Image 1 (cartoon, protein in one colour):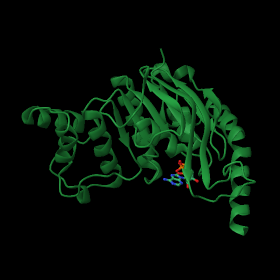
Image 2 (cartoon, rainbow, N blue to C red; image 1 turned 180 degrees about the vertical axis):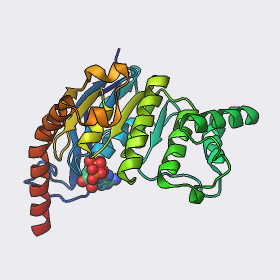
Image 3 (cartoon, rainbow, N blue to C red; image 1 turned 90 degrees about the horizontal axis):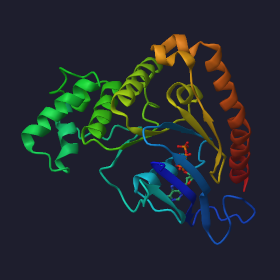
Image 4 (cartoon, protein in one colour; image 1 turned 90 degrees about the vertical axis):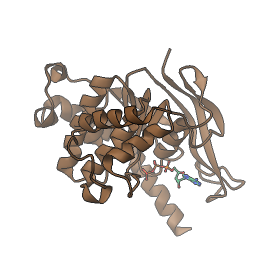
Length: 280
Ligand SMILES: Nc1ncnc2c1ncn2[C@@H]1O[C@H](COP(=O)(O)OP(=O)(O)OP(=O)(O)O)[C@@H](O)[C@H]1O
């Protein structure tokens, strides 16, 4: 049984740009962000979702996180429909969403308070996860005393600490500089391999998608659907190859080109749509 199933998931929002002639706006004031999304994700799989701006990637993740409900269709998690947020899913956003008045350790502990873990155990577990993301020694720093990359590490540790089965990540590294982003990508892959979590990761970056994903799901422009999913595997990953070696390999370039080609038409279509809207 698949861990996560999207079954003909459609999401419309009321009252936005009701231009009858557009596919994304069927009239009556409704705006269709997602239209018949079908996707299955296996337990322990790392799936990356890419698509043009505004195609509904975040909406897809919000629905899976239970932060919003589909207009039609359903999302199953372990065979059960998702009806709201739950501790079985951890979410990491682009913005760190850390509590500024709490230390790094305190922020991770905060995530555990809702789970009923006893206080002493909370502290221990928070330390363990701070260690896992490479921040041992930074327990007592407040968010403003940490770099962007470190803050995002704390956010990841906070999501992992309460041991969700599924990690949902919405462009978590987008605001970081290239070097920090690449080192966090390595870190995330290592954590994923070690913990066996199911990861659904959204990005704009084709290279990031190829580097991270076991499968890359490419979405159409608005209204969003899954256009194609591309399985990604590198022969030498098993031998521990990563970083520059992998990024500069011919296999990597082939995947990057394949996904770029799939995205290209969709991005052009999305731009055209934006232009038309700006002139109406
Ligand atoms: N609560 C809402 N009410 C109305 N429209 C919304 C709402 N949330 C999202 N939308 C619209 O739905 C569409 C899809 O938005 P979404 O944020 O999911 O796209 P995205 O692919 O994540 O975009 P980006 O890549 O730019 O972050 C957009 O046109 C957005 O304006």
